[in-house]
Image (cartoon, rainbow over all chains, first blue to last red; front, side):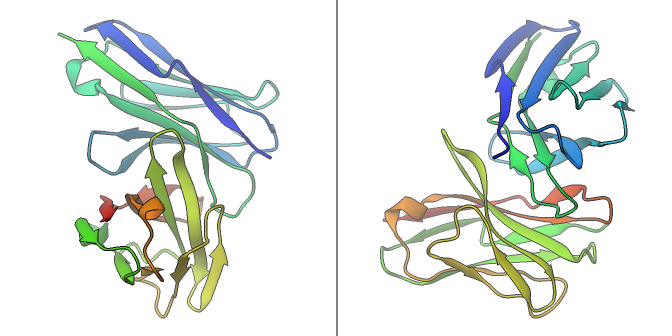
Length: 112
Length: 111
């Protein structure tokens, strides 16, 4: 059974710092991996989607990498801003079914 | 712009009542999903559909049902609401590369 783990559960950094959020999964036979952002009381916003054949994806200050063999993905946020404060979730799909298995999330606070 | 809407956004009901949560998407996606989000459990899949007249059970489907009569809508019904079903419910749909897009959520309280 696929399990997804995100460490740390919470992270607090000063504004301007570069940071890395981690996601690990137990079954390397994934179809894709998706990173989301969730603001308090809101829905999930898709940040980046990495297909199993890809190693990384970039969008603005965000870069997500995928290493299937080790069962890991990282989300790199450059030059963090207070507006980046949110919970970040990773989720994997183990087949072309669209069904996602979510990690518990990392709650990020960026202090001005 | 295409989007997913959910209604109501907040609902309070009593134990034993039937409740239906609406989900409507204008992406024209075939795949639609319902999740619940709880502290300590994260997001868990309740039901999903790959198209009209298709429905499937997810990880936590007991006490819930869905129907798919058209592409745009996937209503979620709680047959007899229980306090354990107090949660935030999210609807989602996915495109051809299985990227999922989520609605704003419905906060349901069962008293």
